[in-house]
Image 1 (cartoon, rainbow, N blue to C red):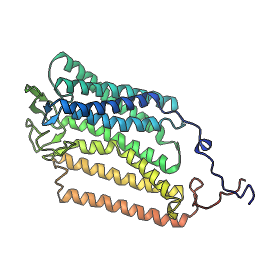
Image 2 (image 1 turned 90 degrees about the vertical axis):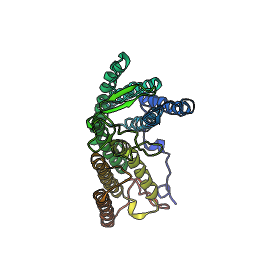
Image 3 (image 1 turned 30 degrees about the vertical axis):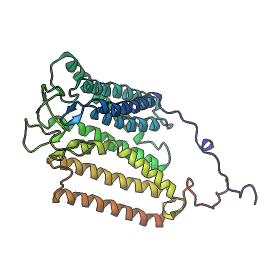
Image 4 (image 1 turned 60 degrees about the horizontal axis):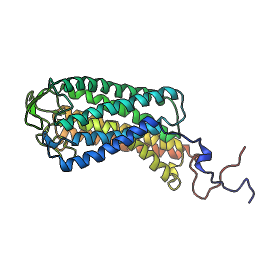
Length: 347
C-alpha cells in the first residue's frame, strides 16, 4: 500500500483550530452550578414555603436552566464566525444580566417572598423589581442578537449548524413566551411568613378566576407545574431547551452515520435536523395553545391529542421524505466515511 492509499486518522486538533470558550458565560455557568448545589442543601435545612413549594425551588430551577443555556451559549459563540466581537459582547451582556436576575431570585427566596409579579411596596422589592424587569429584556435581546448573527452562517458541519440555527430560533420564541405570563390575572396569596401578598400575574391560566390563587393549587411533583390549569411555564421551558436536544440529535446522527448508510451524507443529516426542529416547534406551539386554553398538561382533551397527532404525523412524513431523498442523492460525506473505507486521494 502506498502512502496515498493508506487511510489517515488525523487528530481533531489538526482539523480545526483550537477554540476558547466564552469566559464570562463559562464563569456564569460555574456560578449557577454552585447555586444549584446550594439550593439543594438549603432545601434540607429551610422548611419555609411559597405556594406549597420550598422557597429554594425557584432558585434551583433557574440555576439549572442557566447552567444548560449559558453553557450552550459559551460553546456556540466560540466557533469562528463573522461578527464574533458582537456575539462576544452579547454573550457578556447575557452573562451579567443572568447573574443579576437570578441573584434577585435568590435574595427574594432568602427573604421568604416572591421574586416574580410581587407588588410589595418595601424599598428592596420595589428597586429589585425594576432591576429584574429591566434584565429580562436584556436577556432576550442579547440572545436575539446572537441568534440573528449566527443564523445566516455555517459555523460547523451542516447538521450541527442546522441544529444551532433552529435551536436558537426556538429559544428566542421560548423566551418571548415568558411575557405572556404577565397577562394571566392577579393572585392573592401569602409569603413564607403568612403576610398577604398581591401578585399582578402568575404562571397558570385559570378558568376566568381573576383573583383566585392559581399557582400552587395542584401541581406535578418536582417541577410543580400546574395540574389544575394551563401552565405557560411548560411551553416556555420546552422552547428554551430545544437547542440542547437538537444539538444532541445532530451528535447522535453523526455517530450513527458510519454504520447507517443513508445517514452518511451531511445533507441528509441536516435535513433530518430540520424536520426534527419543525416537529419540536409544533410541540412547543401545542403546549402553549393547551396552556392558554387553561388546560392542564396532564389532562389533554381531544383537540390537544389531535394536534399532537398531527405534529407526530408531519414529523414522521418528513423523516420518510428525507429517507427517500437520501437514496436519490447518494454519495458519502467527506466528514463521515464508512468504517474501513479509504479517503479519496488529494487532488
